[in-house]
Image 1 (cartoon, rainbow, N blue to C red):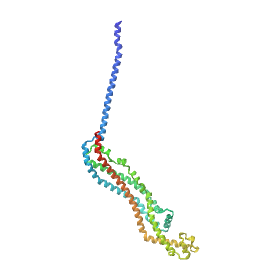
Image 2 (image 1 turned 120 degrees about the vertical axis):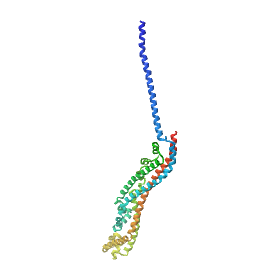
Image 3 (image 1 turned 90 degrees about the vertical axis):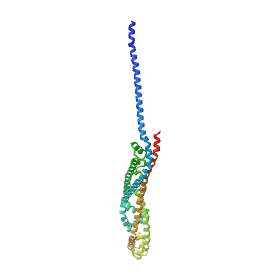
Length: 360
């Protein structure tokens, strides 16, 4: 009986022993997995850190010394490229603005024909009295020529030209820097992050040409230019109209150029409304005399002064055309120079700043 009990004890202890073996084995496996995962994680983080370090500042000190020595000469060589880009842009601007103004010059003879006519003179006088000075000048030369549309299209094209010229300038700068310093991929990447070497970088940092041109739109917009020129030229025309009116008054008062009859003379003093105040018998003669005198004086004025007046108008239009071109050329000249100077300053500071970051 006791012998049977002794034989049963080992079999009862076996499940408990198996449980503890499995328990500790599982803990050991989990511990090993944890250690393995920790090692992998630390290895991965170390690799990422090394990559980031290499991309930002893990560059040899030899590169920094070479870079610091070559930088002044490299940017000195960029000056001709900057001047060339500025000149190229100014030429493109002048060509496009000149083309936008061509329809205005083409219609100048039409305005002069209108101005040197009886209808045109009285229309301009009526416009002056109704505070619409220059309305006919603006209508004939600018509104009917589609000037605003042509100028806006020219400005848009100038924006595209500006991006193209700027892209070429940035490419030239990148090539010049590479020619002066032998750079590996990491060093090139460092320059790309620190400076402005692509058109996309320039647009992000300084805005697009379209944004830049909008800042000047109030001064170069077609409607603003037309209104300003209309006032300028109309002021010149008003002076001439005043002189002609004084001359015609003297002529009409003496009956020269029209009927000297009593009824006609009375009607002449009433102007275009001569038929109202002239004696009945002199109505026809008064009206005929009035407008005949106008026509004669206008024709004489045209013969003597048309060419000079045309030169004055052309000079006013020329001045505005040149103002617009110069303003746009200055905007782009400043933008190009700003980009070059910004890069020069950033690259000059790069060696010290980036080297300190690399030693942290």
